[in-house]
Length: 165
Image 1 (cartoon, one colour):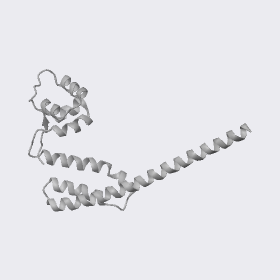
Image 2 (cartoon, helix red, strand yellow):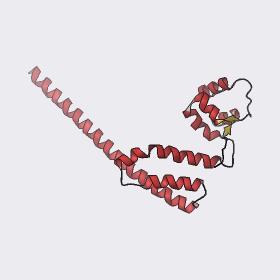
Image 3 (cartoon, rainbow, N blue to C red):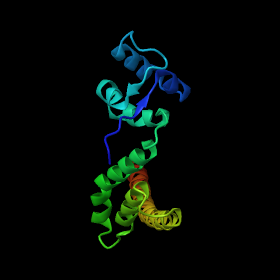
């Protein structure tokens, strides 16, 4: 893929309801030479405001033929960065790895919309399975914690009862 520069403008950032404090910080760093329609490289936002603001600014990117492709490829990279967390818990489940590859293939025009939809459905199934397992674990932990607190509370009441007697 050829090198591409993704840009936005101060106008587009405001139109997308940029956080006033972070917007003011960026304007201060850019200096008075920047006008409403002057293009701002997202790398400048990264440099001045950090990763969170840079990622947020993607919603205000100036239309660019390859902008969608770059954003899809970045999303695949972000997902792949945390894939080891999922694979540690579910070493036999390769669905997330497959959807990441499918996202890259779709972004690069190697698969059709229908193939992309099928991969997305598989990813949703994997996400739901993981979420249900996590929710089950969380619910169990919460129930156990509540039961433990109730047991301690009951124990404290009994102790107080006997100490008063």
